[in-house]
Each structure stands twice: as C-alpha cells, then as structure tokens.
Image 1 (cartoon, rainbow, N blue to C red):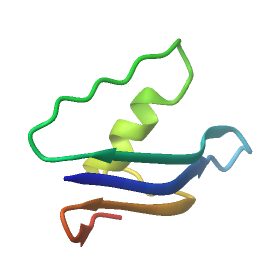
Image 2 (image 1 turned 90 degrees about the vertical axis):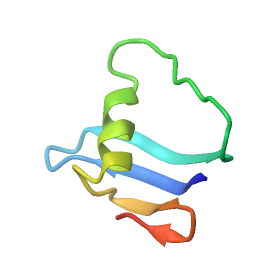
Image 3 (image 1 turned 180 degrees about the vertical axis):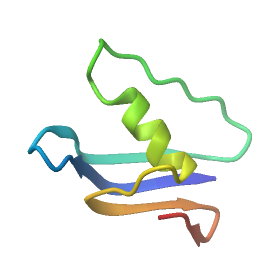
Length: 67
C-alpha cells in the first residue's frame, strides 16, 4: 500500500510544485498519474522514491514512513 498524506513541495526559489496532495493506492491496484507538463508528476514520483523530501506531509509504504 502507498499512502500520501497532505504532501506539499515548495522549492527554495518559491516555486510550488505540489500542494496538499492526498493519495491512497491499495496493494494489488494499478494507479496512473496524468497531467500536463509542469503539474508535479515527476516531483511526486521523486518524493515517493525518496530522492527528494516533501516540504509538508508524509508518505508511507505499508506502515513505514519513507520521508
């Protein structure tokens, strides 16, 4: 399971890439992210992968917080 609770990401220059994102992806389900260029898809994937840290909120896989 992947759970994203109130995640926001603001870069040092003030750019808001994500704001207050909530998502629940249960085990065994396929989830897709769709959106235009610059809407935060890659930023969210970087946060989920642990390559970056959110400004606010928490990301969990199962019961483990990954950020």
